[in-house]
Length: 621
Ligand code: ADP
Ligand code: MG
Image 1 (cartoon, protein in one colour):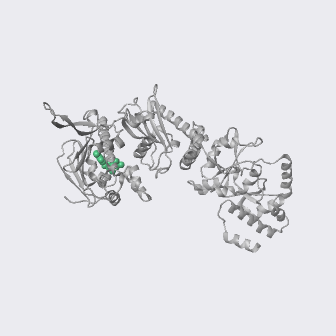
Image 2 (tube, rainbow, N blue to C red):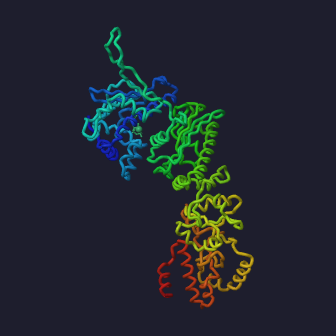
Image 3 (cartoon, helix red, strand yellow):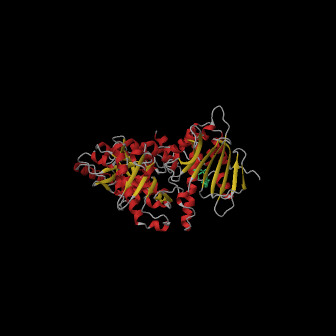
């Protein structure tokens, strides 16, 4: 039988496992047991689909068998088993789910300790074994055996393993100075490992345990009697009482099940009974998974019917804007052989989804109130998703999202909620002001913010491309309109000031026309504004749309048809403005070009002709 080589990616992971001097090598058992449990789930599920229930539900089991004489540890399951092709593709290549993500993370992991927190999969067997033999038999297929010493590839050959399922034999490594592998042959050690890592596995994990018993008919002669012991309590974590579950247990379950290195930002354990009975265990992650925001990312919760998983990822349970939530729902009311199509229309399911939505909402609001730092961290990861939620769903049942948003406050120099903004408004302030730019630094220096800030009004600094769109969709908060500092109707002046402005407009009409003629099609219009203070000019889009919004629109499909021409707004109180009136036409044209170029730069836009600009500046100097 020819040896086959592992795929490169798998090889690297394998090397890591083989050479691991890692104290958490004990987790190999958890990995093998969890694979066994998955395999039983698969067999059970397949049997249900075909209506042929195979063996009885209570016959499913996982068995652990230490053999001191042979120095082997065997893990057996009566799950779905694998064909020789499956042995090859599943064990010869790094598996799809957890293990792959782990190996990707390895690139940047500076601490190999993360292994213990991660589903590292089948290869972890090589942390304790120098040879692994896997016998497997899938129903209706010939049995096969896979064997490897890790380093020089693996073999797959036919064999006559009778029972349906898989038997994995670990030939334990020789004891060395740094490690004693005999511990994995000891009953008490194996028992405690199962308790620690696999207690909530639903299928019984059995082991033959010896007990000393008096020999019948004798006074002081003892014999060892062996009997099966079930090592796990089999109660899924979520079915235990909240007060029986430690924070560690919640977190461990999260990391094992959802392959995250980090602890979750928050855990929700929900149990309802009555009209609608279900248990849900939800986690808000701290950091987005590596594929979050890509097409590859699938949202959803695991769905169980009375402890049996019926769907790996039930999308219907979470709205898109809560797509980051991880977790599961277990309900006794769901029928086991419910099909995907039926689920989509299931009233039960949408009622659960609706309840969960409210719970998540409450939790976010609670965090904002009680755990602001944790929420800020969470919001940095998923705030964009919530803001898109506002943009896509406002007015259709997602209005509560407005209170989950955080924006940077210019005056307070920290992130605040809309409610906090409104609560801090001076009495005479009517609107909620915002300014948008591509970075906080840019927004803080925007000329358009000068007058509003001078008035003593706070400004929300928007730096995410979706921000301004979200605010525009909401229109108002608590009866206060959102107003861009670029808005043409920005109303900050007193009656007297307004009158004075009208006069200035009439006076400067000729000058403004001349500047417009000088600049031609580069600008929509040249007009006076009262929103500036120390700057002479700024650019504003149609309808008060900020330049930032134009930039975003340009990025969208067909965005290149969006014209990048703006209103040039001038500050009549700026000393330079007074000078303009005295210039002859040629000079005026030069100055107009310079002012326009400056405004472009301030708005973070590229100049049409940087060389000409630089030349003009030099000439002036
Ligand atoms: P993961 O469990 O994350 O998919 P593993 O490396 O643990 O990755 O396992 C690789 C694959 O091998 C599994 O996805 C599964 O298809 C298969 N496998 C492992 N152990 C068993 C088993 N006991 N019975 C059936 N299939 C198994
Ligand atoms: Mg696995």
